[in-house]
Amino acid sequence: MVTNGRVFAPGAPPPPPPPPPPPPPPPPAVLSAPVPAPSAPPAPMVSQTLARMPGVATAPYGTPANTERYAGQQVAAVQDVATNPVSTFSVDVDTGSYANVRRFLREGQPVPAEAVRTEEMINYFRYDYPRPRDAAEPFGVSTDVAVTPWNPDTRLIRIGLRGYDVATDRRPPANLVFLVDVSGSMGQPDKLPLVKSALTMLAGRLTPRDRVSIVVYAGAAGIVLDPTADPNAIKAALTCLDAGGSTAGGEGIALAYTTARQHFVKGGINRILLATDGDFNVGISDNTALEQLVKRNRDDGITLTTLGFGRGNYNEAMMERIADIGNGNYAYIDSAMEARKVLDDELSATLVTIAKDVKVHVEFNPDAVRQYRLIGYENRALAEADFTNDAVDAGDIGAGHQVTALYEVVPVDAKGWSDARRYPANRPLAKTTGGTECAYVKLRYKLPDSATSREIARAIPAAQLRSATAPAGDMAFVTAVAAFGQKLRGDPLLARFTWGDVRRLAGDPRGPWRQEFVELTRAAGLHDAGSAAGE
Image 1 (cartoon, rainbow, N blue to C red):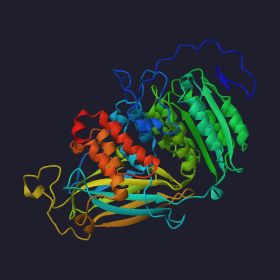
Image 2 (image 1 turned 90 degrees about the horizontal axis):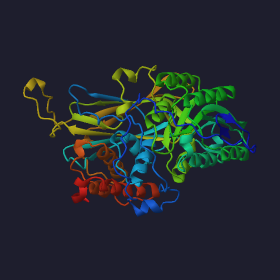
Image 3 (image 1 turned 45 degrees about the vertical axis):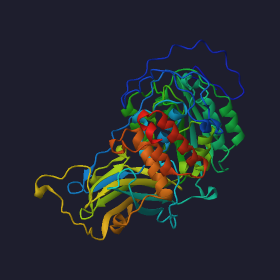
Image 4 (image 1 turned 90 degrees about the vertical axis):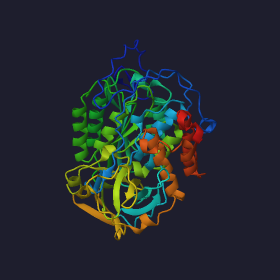
């Protein structure tokens, strides 16, 4: 238990706390601008189906003042193959944006466009990608092409990656540090109480070879639990945590890294799991200093996963940023069901890295493709030269993780997004035969214990562009999710594609997660008066 920065052993009653001090002012928004508070109270629950889902809190308590911070970017621009034929980006396995958007829609609130990252919407779901053969080549790679539902003149190219799975009994031993924010801002029911139940669930999945330490911070940081494999001891330590005090996020992270380093497992998993609302307001408040701390420890083999909780003062910009730098992943936990998905169903993907510095490089053939755009991944874009530069950090992939990228392309003989150029010398040659390839995909990565990069390459046949049909099955669903994200971001190229169109494209899917997605499209449509006719 932490009271006014002091740590007490489980079972020892703390002295009565003094009256809490007034909260400090919020930090300057270095990474992003705050989301303005809504002008009206939240609307009632928008979906009875969502309200009935188990483990979903429907916010029976007052909403705190909105100082949430995001770092969203504008929708990526269309590129001409004649002048920019190559697209390069780092993979992203985060899913936090989707769960956070779901929280807004559940509460009947409009979704801030800057909170939406379409790639995280897409990668939240699993698709029927081929399994990789073995750990020596840890990815299965697949591609397919379909006619774009919102523009019959364009095509969607899907690139799908699937990492190999690691069974629990083959997972390396883990040295985990639970870094828990117990500051006053964590007192809401959707924050610390949910943190405690989520981490208790994770502790129940660990093996006797794993060790867990618990570090807390609130005004000052302290160690609540030394490394142990005893799930009962972990549960008891989590149970006694209470919220109170200001937030020393940087100070807590420094102590967590020290603890992880002291108990480092060579050849094992050494990871900090930070559970917080991201409201860092004292301690290492300088973003650059905090990022450098995370980077130094990442380079020494200690990774960082961030688990976001709560609303009102949520600093998602910081949560996503330090998880990316820390070679971990970022998830947002808005319910007991989401906690189970991230920390139980996908535990190996959350903890076990199968490849690091994973980059994707796509070169389009100007004989087949006139224009293109990558849907999402705006904050993961890399320069072409970065692809072969092993000093450039990129995203990591965990066991069983899937990564999907969607390109919308204009075939060379189709009408593009921009008017034809006036002078013939400035126009691409209209070679309607297209050759044998429309694009060439390269995937570059390192195995976890290697400093040498490897490559996988695949050609996409040009015939797939010419024979493409309407998306069906998995391709239809992933296209619906992409449209969902882009419409929430205000993508002008989907202005005439209604929420009803999105829902019809998703079809009647099986499974609770996909069924929930369909309900979210209904909720989103209620905030878009212009879509009413399309419902």
